[in-house]
Length: 349
Image (tube, rainbow, N blue to C red; front, side, top):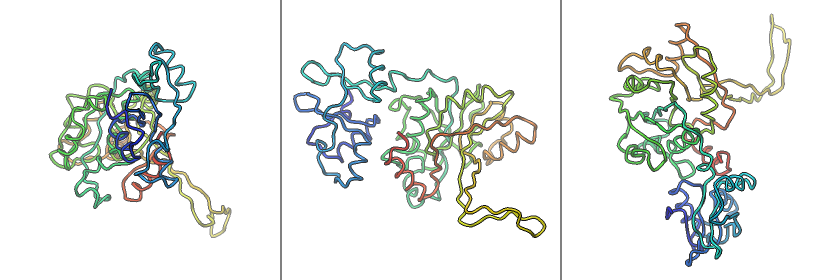
């Protein structure tokens, strides 16, 4: 068992949070010295404790759930999944007759999505100038939200949807990204890299992958936080006739703090007090047919908007998939602050 999955009742919240960050399972099991299960602490428990004012050096025993749902070693997979779904839990400790911890089952592993026949390319080569000074030493994809790098959160979302083959396009401080992510084994995926010789935009790096991408594939920006259902987007793309590209679309709302007039020939024909406007915006998530790569100029800066225009100008189909799940572009410092608040409030759970 991963040693970062367990902690002592005498551990601090800080130590528990470090273990949760390292194990990537959003929880840690609290175990006595003799191996007996004392309780469980989730990242949500830690967040709520901190919001209540419990200090980071407070004891885990003060905030843990002392009676988590458990099962015996003889319970089969189907029964374990049924129990977890019925009780609304994602972690199921397996204990023996003496309540000693034997194992722990994770819901996402027991009902893992079958692999999608679609790889993903994560664009992670930008300098992150709008997040300076944070990005002077740390590449933007490794900026942490809720204790975890943005790019790792994206990789986990892709994996949960069944995407296991991932290429990461890198440029700025690429060695730090490679060092952190490696070959992806720690995150349950297979990762390789495409090194941009110079910044190539959100689509330009695809020219480095012409020979590798033979089926529709995802392209995602590394600086977004989302619960997008990638499998649903892939199914939508398949249903569009002759679609060369499907663009993920989020709805951006703007509250106008004034009364809005509709005017005609110098007269007011309508007034709406402080309306809320909704605009479909580019979510930085795309599905592309490999044939679209041929439109990208070799070695030149080429953004997603350039790709969309090029396809539309040639009469190719560009579909739009509405992302109804949580989505946030972490582009500026205030966006990063919001992202950390949202994670603390459990909006990505």
